[in-house]
Length: 156
Image 1: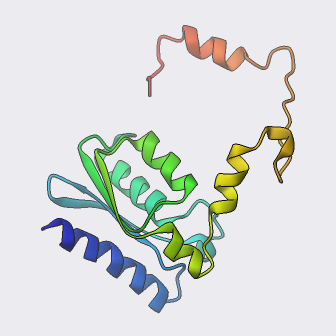
Image 2 (image 1 turned 45 degrees about the vertical axis):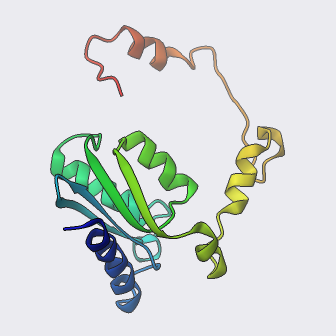
């Protein structure tokens, strides 16, 4: 399949998701060696899970298929430019490339505006809309120290 055909598949997933009333107008696929190994649709409202974006769902499916927590050598095709959360998930998954159809500006025009998140990330913690305050008991870094000396850790 060509890049165009893979993108068409991601867009078809988004459209079918809207037509079947399962969630938002977003779809994504993960491809490795020319084969689709993960498919995702926006299922935020269908599952009451704010992290169930199409890209995250596709990453979960592909990682399960590969039995790995990284998408080495994979490509992600998504119907829309990824949001800040999905960008984070994509960087953690480490695919070799991401391709998108619609832009974040297209999404904003229909009510999916992520600009406020980008704006919030630029602010100091104490100025953000959702308060974030550090609470650090004396042993707060014990899990980190234990990890650092563990012989069973898997680096990622």
